[in-house]
Length: 542
Image 1 (tube, rainbow, N blue to C red):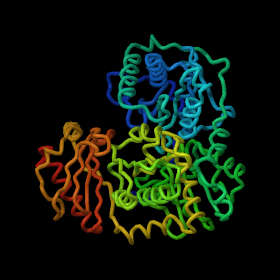
Image 2 (image 1 turned 60 degrees about the horizontal axis):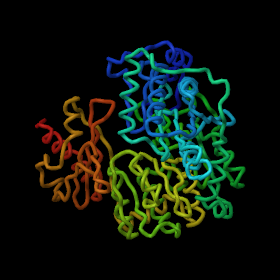
Image 3 (image 1 turned 180 degrees about the vertical axis):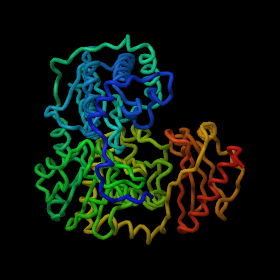
Image 4 (image 1 turned 180 degrees about the horizontal axis):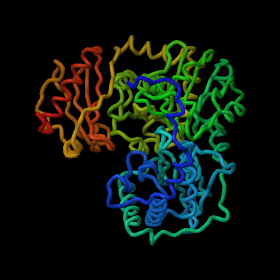
């Protein structure tokens, strides 16, 4: 923990926005340098113009590659495009529009030149493709320009195909490879044209008006729930006011500032400015507000949520997911009787116990929200959530809402839970603890060479020779997720009361150890210690 974590940012912490944008246009990436190549992670390509990893050349190449990909896939409808409040997002959108128009793609931008949250863009894609008349004009897809909760100097670029969610690895691998070819070729095959006029779409009104089909606003309004919403300087800033006005809620936008340097933020755990609504350090200024029944935060593209209650403070994301699941499956009678509960395999096992009590199928998948997309579309998964504070769920009628994470939605759900149950989500989690136990959960990093990371990503459960973990027999050694048999890019080891999962980092020479124990903090520490030994032994380290 950095000594200044949770304290206000000072002038020395802030980026030079003008220099950052200047570097976007002036720096030229070298495709032979790994750190300067296009690389899609679980949430698109990310980088910074200062490190020549997110520059105009990258966006020209990625956009051209997306155009070629959608052509090869027969996608002929409009492409929705939107961006968040990061300083590099607006230049990147301008660059992308030049390429899209140059290739004759029909593009829809925000009608009011507003920021576009990730869930609003996903909602727009699904709304178009679910309308038979519009779909007859061709399937729609989209581009979201955001590095999510990353620091102010970063930029991000993500492609969402017609299913509305994050593109799968087949698509992103092809797009990245083609983009790097284009950069290496001096961008000769990139087509550009200055957009004289593009079509517009009212993302905000369409999204806000449709919320009545997924959130019980009558209950929230009748109960007089007092809500405070902090967009953390992100793309949801104008959406919260629209929600308040549309549904007559007692809702205050506690911070309306938009600043690409994020000078109003408190520093995260490592001393960096990071708009993570699940981090107590990043949310320190939000936690200072009093007098609200529910206080919420979102990250820069509003795909993550932070829930603050008067009796519990900032909720651990795992705790809130468990509460949301129990509430939703008891209050959404029109959902399919066999609709499953979706979780990533590094999310808390409290969810497993809630699912068992609800007699609902648990659908456990690898890290990445893309895995929930098919189930959300056909209604076979009622809720999909990640431990990193990202989730979405179905409408009242059991049809898809978004197929990307929706932080606004999960924040509103907290107010519905408070209104309908008369209890805060924190109090409801306390009741879950009384029924199922109190799990201790933590993620730590362990050093690993690039070769060890590569080996870990291909490791199988059979490579683990241990039979016990922290005094308990090992019941499962997984290298594929139980829900869909997809490779998890690491391993997960389980016992009756504990588990750990190890995955290589995509950006640092470390591997991540997620661990949880229902036997307390001391047992968790033992699990973590033995997990490192187990993994290192499997990798040949000791």
